[in-house]
Amino acid sequence: MTLKNINGVVIDYEIIGEGKPILALMPGARRGSIEMKSLAEKIAKNNIRVLLHDRRNTGKSGMLLDDAETEEVTWANELRELLKTLNEQYIFISGSSSGARTSLMYALHFPEDLIGMIIMRVTGGEFAANRLPKNYYEVFIETARSGGMEAVCKTNRFVEYIKTNPAIEQQLLDIDVNEFIRIQTNLLNKFLDGANYPVMGITKSELDSIKVPSLVIPGNDNTHNSVSGIEAFNMLGNSELHKLPIDDVDVDLISWEDWEPYEDEIALVMSNFINRVMDK
Image 1 (cartoon, rainbow, N blue to C red):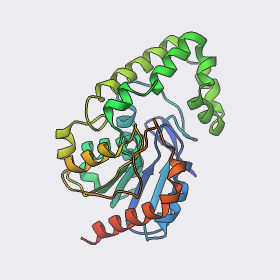
Image 2: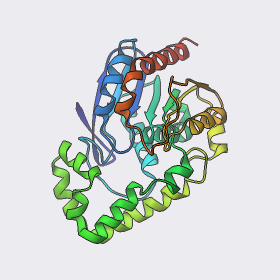
Image 3: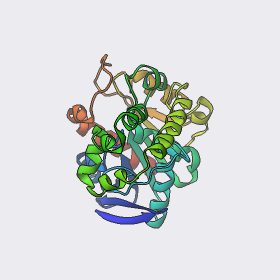
Image 4: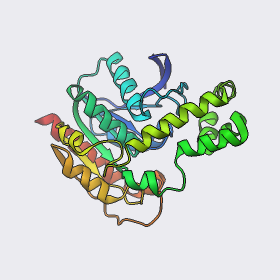
């Protein structure tokens, strides 16, 4: 992997493959890009370069906690700066879950940069906000209030981050607990503000304004149900839909690992879409 300083945050990234177009591919939640490595390698066999990067506060990249924007908007802004430093011209953007939300924010704010977009496992707003037992921000706030920053370091989300980037532990311990709670509370409010839409974080009119060629691959759990993916497809201004041979399952969350049997199909569909759009 290679390091670049983007807006004061060290971002760890890797480019796989060769070819004219580049696909920025992002995982869900706050997981590192390693989760998408296998899919990236399969896509790269089709004359497509794939950019994997650890977004701010994930993987091996640096940590900077702030509440100026939603995490997805911040990630989109920093990805754009990273791509600009690489002088990329033929850009496709893609992601699963929070990576899909980041892709939507990128397409909404920087449509002139993009050749196309692929979103997978689209998050449904109502379930994510109202039916999940607790979202990330609520867990962080409760944990910080009850056990301080030492307890925050032991949450599953930060245990994973510290494992890949050990320096993060001391950085977390050095944060004032009240400031941490303030930031997470504001991020929670921004998160909930975007929950009253069929697709998390983006309005129908905003979706309809996105005209770049798009491909939607719906999910099949309660957080990413197929209905949300199909609604995104219907609302986007210029989109295609690919439904995997799966049925919705009444569970809160299915891991990306559970989609491994469909990875070859996903790689082929994504590659065909990119090459078809490039040929136009």
